[in-house]
Length: 330
Image 1 (cartoon, rainbow, N blue to C red):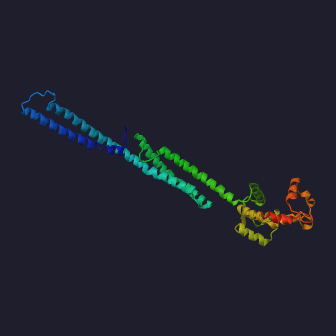
Image 2 (tube, rainbow, N blue to C red):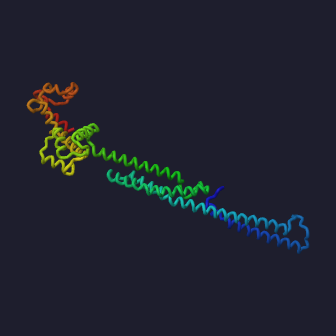
Image 3 (cartoon, one colour):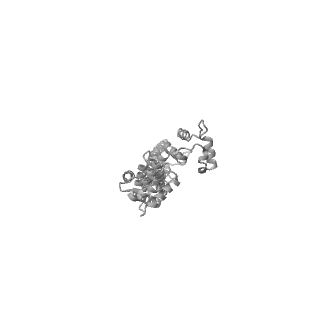
């Protein structure tokens, strides 16, 4: 059985050998004393054994030599194991903190409650710091090469070898990449919350139509023309105020334009805006009184919906104002 350095030390072979030697010396002394008593009593032959002190001395000498050889072998084994153990410790002194750092960073990024922008900044900073990881990883590979050259397979001081550490590091690099990508998507989704992909694409088409130099920004004149094309006829002072609110006072970037369009869309989804829209389809700027006044604007399915859900006044006229009011109570 191949024992580790600590296991070999625990065997305490020198003490075992010393105990055997002491026991042997005691037995030799006892047998010599008994033989001398026999001789003093005039007994020459011992009918119970043919062994003599000389024979026993020879056997004891061989045992002593065997014990000395075992003691020397143990010392050599212990020295070799101690050297191997130092190599294992040298590996683990680099690998274990490296793995602990990766685990800590992964847990930190996974369980972070910081804002998504702060999380992305932290992940990007860690990605930039991967060069230091690479430096430590090379030291780990070098230490593993030394273990391999000495035939050391099991390292009692580390749960991973060099190959496993490299795989864990590669997984961490992938984790950072995926985490950053997911955070960017979440941040973008948060920015665009409340608008569909189709609406965002429409915003971009409108924006690009007036972004004549492809800078992803609109200057004052381009922004004014873009808004006019969308039915927003703003006064110069209003344009200036919007550029300050959604840009830097001189230009409006695309994300600022999207933010403005989201607000504009939100304003169009108010009760007042919906009632204004209803008034636009009726005669004389008033809500329709009968569905046949606006049936050319709706599909059969839409007309059936309005017929079912728009309440009617006592005189039989449809009450769009009450319908709008009720819609915003839901």
